[in-house]
Length: 327
Image (cartoon, rainbow, N blue to C red; front, top):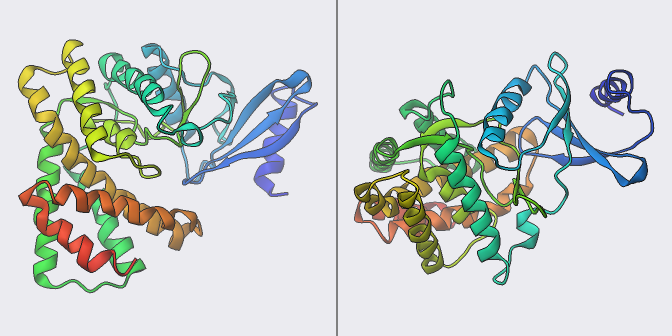
């Protein structure tokens, strides 16, 4: 057993008073955090979070939990905490991920619940004091695509023309992101971070990296999910449905509602460039290779969007002709 696990078990027993439980890994996510499920007598269960303090700051999770709880969405209760060691004891929201339940028969109900929760977060969630999703952060995320996917993973040497193409497209994507209304952004609002819940569906997790940023970012995370894909015509219909609801809630005005489809599509390109880079980094830096299989889906989204917008057609062709064949 790892020393961190021994320390966690000691904390659970000595500080939380839990003596009789079965301990198992619940999730080993894409960060340095790990989660363990504690099976208690009588069928109850809890989740223990291990966030090594030299790599993660669990105070962000605690602080964003409080923000989200005020909006009325379903996030886990925090039963106990030991910040110095990076340990939290949490409510267990269950094991049924959206990803495992999504199919053509369930998707409309599940996505409607998820979008209603997201609109509630955007309408009520406070952005005061959150880090800004600014030009620098947006650019750093897209640089992951160049540094980790193109260079480290594929060994792709870019011509000056290709480098100029990426720079110009990155500037365009940043400009459109910064035009959008600012809201509380989860940053990973997708089918692996949403849990099916009997009451107040969905259960929401993995929000500790929340920022104040573009309205459509979390919409893209959900509707153009890196792990499951829906027909473009259906995605367009959802975007219109939810932008109409956002307008009715007063989150946007008529002019902004008309701009949402473009913002959504271009925000998607920014996110998918970032995701492709992160998936390559997870493989090379962290030894987590399972995400490599998701890169073609992520890049296909960019190709698809390039076919819609002349300003992104060259980027789409670059992905289609230079990058995907090497994947």
